[in-house]
Length: 254
Image 1 (tube, rainbow, N blue to C red):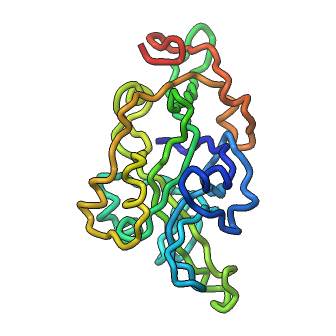
Image 2 (image 1 turned 120 degrees about the vertical axis):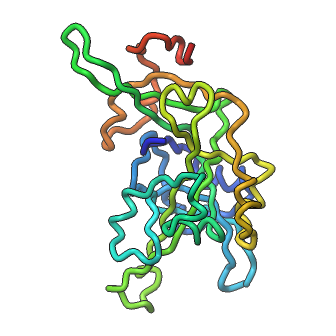
């Protein structure tokens, strides 16, 4: 998976869909048609409430790009927007989060790029494609989250001393999605949602069994290269354009 996706559902809509409550950090989140690394994203997770002692499913704003708790510099998170599902449970940067700090990042769809060769005076470039569910339902992308403490800020100045970040799990792409890119986000079946978010579930193989590739083929359409700029935003980015690559018609791979 490349580093952009679309997230236009409001925090309250996400909370309603996934039976969660909106946490203060998510209240000001705005829709985005071009979510980029280090942007705040709406994520659903379960944590014990400090005041009540009860486990609460909540919608929070997390920064996209996981910063391990032991990292000396939060800038490292910009390179950790994805974690491979095949190895996340054993990699030092992700294994603790895989065991106890899992989340769901709902998204409308995501972008991938495919190289287009130079032709008739046209320079080579990368054509972006938008991948999404044909029925318009959100992708429940499996993620991991982590807490990182800024040691330069006094601990009693919480939450200023803490940064909460996340990464999206990816797997080998299947069906038509594999013709655009060799990786795709791991999405959760609704029946697996409760177990995935349960912080008490830590047995690695049981957790891994919850991660499945979507049964339905994703719809794909070519979109404008305007999405290449992180400054571009708006629904216009999803407008279908002429596909410069042979063998792809009507927004779906032939």
